[in-house]
Amino acid sequence: MDFNSIFDKFNIDSFNLDAFKLENFDMNQITNATKDAIDSVLKINETVSARTEQIFRLSTDIANDTLESSLNQLKALTDVKKPEQFIESQMNFASDSSKKAVENSQKVYDLLVEAQTEIGTLVQDSISKK
Image (cartoon, rainbow, N blue to C red; front, side, top):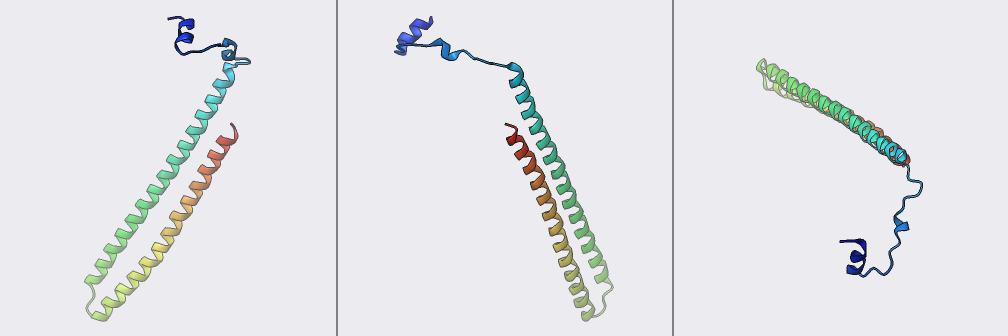
């Protein structure tokens, strides 16, 4: 099938092939733009991976610390002889646990804000290059 039969089939009255000519077509510009886009995506991906690893490490540290604190509390409770000691020990444990929970929440929050800022900046830089 030739172009004329295609034109006839789709009822195209006039077809200007000049409209499809690419003026000032520079393959190097396309190559460089593609390379820049890929570099930006790779940089963002590396940052996301590094921050995800930090968050995972922090979460693991928090879980280990919580488990260790709980085990230490259980050990301490084995030495308790009086109900008053039990209550005091539990209150101290609850107080310490609450403080650690607030501290750990702040650490996670700070890390997430840093990650958001860093990734946001990289994305913004990537967009501004276009």
